[in-house]
Length: 378
Image 1: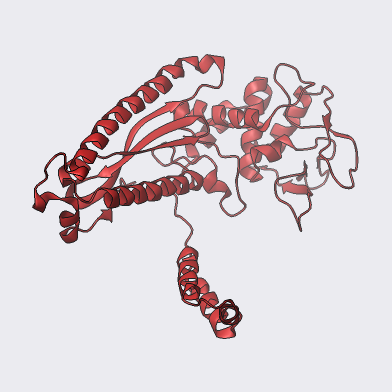
Image 2 (image 1 turned 90 degrees about the vertical axis):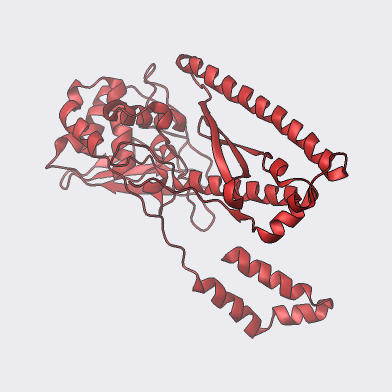
């Protein structure tokens, strides 16, 4: 709605050439109240999502007794429970100060101190305090118990330079999560994401390339942007990915509209071979999409290939699928060049086209509308 209002406002002001008159209209109370009312009239509904993490929780209850866990699994469990129950980003977990975090002796509540989180207040960095209640009825899912066990297993001192503050309280802080190979070293937010990803994949049986862990949560959509398990144990993309995909589809449709305007004299059959390609990169997953004119004068977006770009040595075999994706793109570009040559020949008249089949005449009687693929039922 906001882009539509801005476009309407710009179109109205463009009719007035005199700068003084334009400024007078912009400052008019009726003019400003009208567009303010238009913006208030549209309410954007939050997306509805279905997710089920019951298999993961059941696995924790049965197979994750804290003292018996390896340090790797215990670290993943702590990161997972803090992320879910504290609504924390990976960067937030990475910035927990162990020295300033404590468990209340009477209530048993877990008080976390997060150094310089992403959110700011009045433009200034802050230290965020989070309180998590213990789960006395379900000790396997209790983050306080997992935290205590983790601190007992990682007693080595570790100091991280304190982030730059205007009034820096101390030069160093003690991070909670430690490097598995050297407990005196800290880890990065990416390592914490990998801990959570491994913990989710292991008990649920979901393929690792189907898991998407976002690190840029917002307070309103924190769980939607986190990994989401459907009732069928299928990971769906988050809002961030959905919005980026919609942007790609919008740009692809605009490109097709532009191409349609450039080649008015070509055959509709030839123009239907035209492809617009887009690459989407989320985490380490690369996806190749192509847009084209489909049947019934609709445009469609087709998933061509997806591949993981390896980040670790044990993922090196995924380079095969990544290179195959690039090879597929090269083949598609070669086909596109041939179609471009054919379109130019028809547009310039080097190749004759029947009048009734020309693009200009065809789309006079056939509207060009977006194609919306049906979503599978849950």
